[in-house]
Length: 214
Length: 249
Image (cartoon, rainbow over all chains, first blue to last red; front, side, top):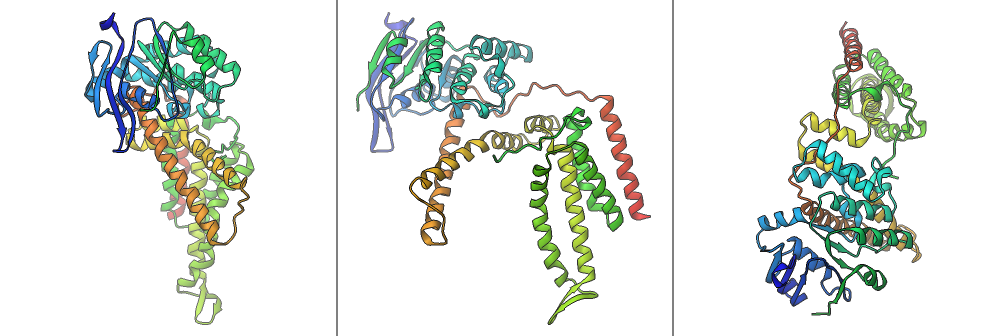
């Protein structure tokens, strides 16, 4: 199913400045039903790749297709960001509202939902992830593991079609890692999971791709 | 912890609408500026202090806040009277510490403390987030509110980064001395903090873009003005009004 791919990168080149090339002529696609594991040495461009897909950085060359359409302009990517969720490496970057409830509500509000709808989706999402008790908590008082799960909740609350997860297990203990694995396996969405954690990747992915240095 | 709460007891003030509290705090804080009579100022200060103490704050936390203001006031008390002409209390060569200057300094000290105490009483016990929501409802500039909310959210993160850097320095046997090495290392520390803060702000901005941020936060807290708010405003107006009359009588 060549045309059914949810995400497709073709001949992508990306460099920071003139010298520091991270991606060179790389192609990749995410097919329906897939959970794609992505691994590779530090600095090979895994995070960059996810940011290219979200339109946060612009590649020098190559074509980005998301959900069946070629995306190039900021307007294209604004649409992409409504349908694709990116989990950041550092949850402190992602959680910028003072309380858990506000943070999870932030995305749905931006999608234009009403107060009642937002309230409902926030409760459902926190419930699904077993985070209901944290609703009123101050985000910076949570542990790392809790913060990661809340960050995931902020994304799932927007009901994305595809998930991009950047090093989701870094800094998590075994309990939280197992919990995260369980959650991810239970989600219907296709996803790309970037990780150095081979054990985790083995369990979560349906296919693993290893990036090399360009 | 940089963000320290007053640890007060739940009181009538907490039951007021945050918007009413904010507006009352602004009025109460501006009020002492119109006073000139020393006795009225003392009464104003006493009333503000009484309101603060009624909320039963942690006295250590309260003392810390008042100390910050009064270190500055003490400097004023020591220095200002030398530059004001009038009846000399102390003379040092050509310079005189004047009674008029001392009075001026005292007035400033009383006003300053009265302002700080009324703000502590009305806003110091309001949770930062609710204060931001109140400001939004009062149509304060949204950029200002965003800055304030980000400060609330990230001050602890920056503090943690500062501590991490300090620890990294300490485990390599750094102890501050009065020399160029200390100065340079502290410069690196501050520079590093700025660089990290900038990096982080860029990542936060990306995260916000990903979730469709369009310039403002949506709040979903519903404020309602109740009878208690009316009573409070009337009492406050009556108290401030009588003080004003006493001042100019």
